[in-house]
Image 1 (cartoon, rainbow, N blue to C red):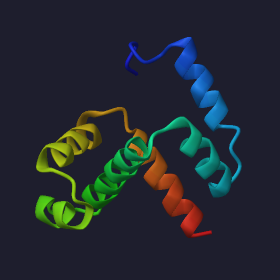
Image 2: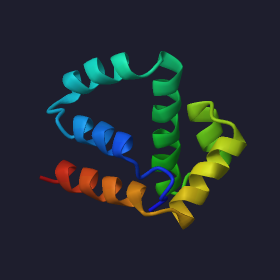
Image 3: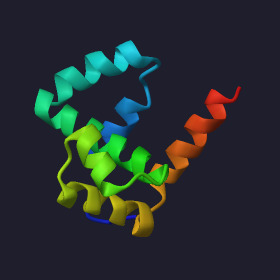
Length: 99
């Protein structure tokens, strides 16, 4: 874990996020918390990660998401050398889809 982001303020933010119970609550909270562009950037990165996880090519990902190759590369680096946060979420999402 990156010690630079592990602060009391970030803990407080994550505790707040963990209080959300459904998608509508997420929309309300994140619309208040983020600008439209910040939220769209986060969602784009998540889509890029999902497509990389599905072994899509950079070209396919760029065409579908509009992400730059630099963004795709950064997300790919996180998938390959990060803390496995994406994998954790993808695994849980797959499990919930199969229930």
